[in-house]
Length: 256
Image (cartoon, rainbow, N blue to C red; front, side, top):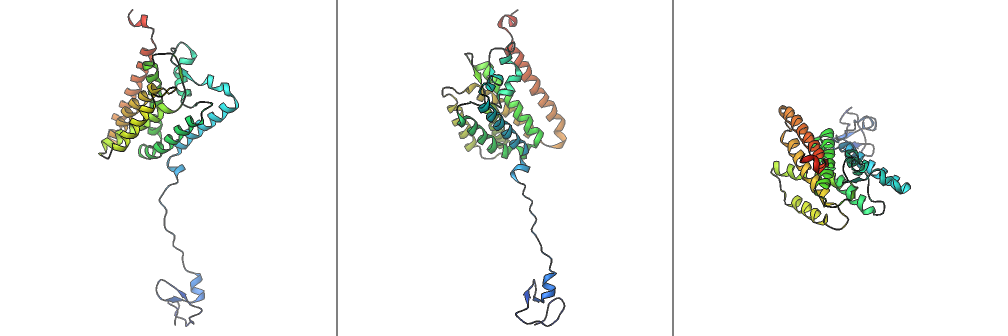
């Protein structure tokens, strides 16, 4: 037989099958290898902020195991903003702290953050996702401040996670996709939030604020509506801050 490229005669034992016909040993070494393009991003490159948030939570938890009193400097308590424990900064620091003794607390929160973040961050992009996350944290703190009837303290990323749940549910509704499974997940988690030792108020607050923020982000996702999106987010931020100051104001000051 002859080589398909150089047309030299070759024996069957020396031939190499080509795309068409056979190639001699010399030409077979020069064949160009064609590799399939891989357009799929790795999980880390597709959702870097989700992994970063999980990493911060895990690092803080490990530090809590080394320094058990660290939680005292991170927790949020509904004692009013005049106390350090009730400051708005504590709302955000408490979202990265978890129970020292119950590893399931951080485990479930981080699993939920990974599942939801891997779906939402690619849709919104990094900075919109981060905005949604921190708005939900503040919503969770406000929920606990306004709805908790007794003084206590909270730690954990649950408020932010519920905010992501609320936003994802809104995405499904706006995009006219099946919402039954998401309604079931949120319902189960809300019911479990009424178990002793769990702050359902933070869950509800995060869910409401996350849903409102998610609606703004998904409904104004077109380029020409960018101004509307920015103004709406500013409006939500201002509204949350105003509610914060009103909820922290002394009762006598409200009626003076």
